[in-house]
Image (cartoon, rainbow, N blue to C red):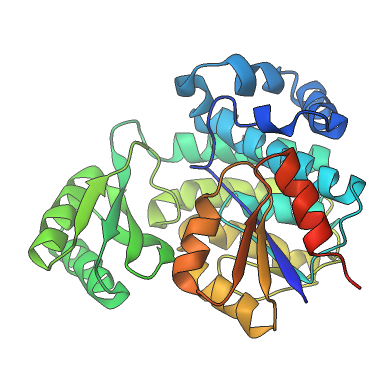
Length: 314
């Protein structure tokens, strides 16, 4: 029995999401460590803060990184073994790099805070956005995006997340997204809805942020990971630190190819995919991608203990 770990990104956060991990001191210790590094009380924010504050990308990104690493450390403390292969959804790719020993926790926290600020600054407030399109084939959505971009002088629309079959997120200028939503409905989409996020991630509007990240990553030591990581931009694993940095830059302007990622994980012979962090967002997507894979979510203390026992390598 071989298993993979996947690390969630933005969209899995909620106030109180760490409450289920009582009895695991390493959870709060990891949050204390992160709070000291960033000089901000992350535990208070995730436990007692407002949803609005938690959903600010400058807070969400370091908090989701910290949550994923806290749960991974709890897994290891309870006797869990290392997964055969790992991946992270968008921001979760940074969590995966820390888990694989390629990035230090402190460097990753500073990087994702910087990434959030760069993304926030790349597009003026109210200019861009994202929308979820449900029930259409990828090819139809790609055509919709191409057509709307071609018809516009200066606005763009692109697929940003291939999350599951029939579930794609598009990103771009707000006006182009509205047109995309209307066109998707006429093409037979079951649902086409604007998402409550102002930053159009994983599309060409993030080029200024990608340039900033490229410069910032040059200052950060990165090592060959001790576990294979499938990257969002090309669904391949890399050991060369310079190549990994390039994929992190590419990730900001490229779609998250989650369907391809889970299929590639399945092709390695993995039988179980473990979502390492609070929530069950990825498990829900993964189930729709490949029903033969067993899905586990480490969403609370009990789930971690059960999974450690279930996946003990004999």
